[in-house]
Image 1 (cartoon, helix red, strand yellow):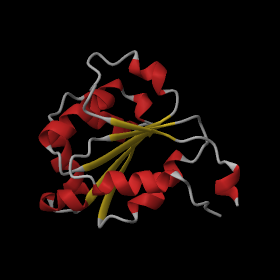
Image 2 (cartoon, rainbow, N blue to C red):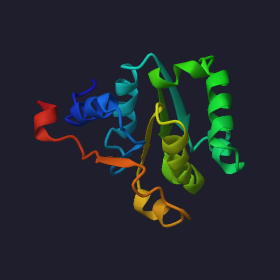
Image 3 (cartoon, helix red, strand yellow):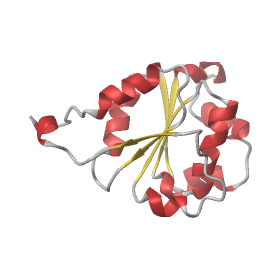
Length: 153
């Protein structure tokens, strides 16, 4: 059973904002961050899901590749035309596993502002300490709390 989460309204508003920045969903472990975004991804024509606990996904950010090369590779492997970038959600799960991926959010925003990027992870406060150049002012945040009484009923 999937519960309707209060943050769904925030995600809809973020999607409609023409000046949106990459979004980082923060929250404790097992609060439903991944489920929330996977449900939200259905509102897009295309979506690309990455899980940085998988070495193949994490490798994209650990090889000093340019943002354009990363996106071309992802779109090609997902059989999505790069011209559909505005209709695509890229979800980077477990982003705390790669400080390089956190840093790369800045370049997604600067070089491909039409791409909808959401990252999620727990214990991000610890991972952020390892990021050499955090993308301050180039990302937005939402915090997902554990399921509350209103969401349950």
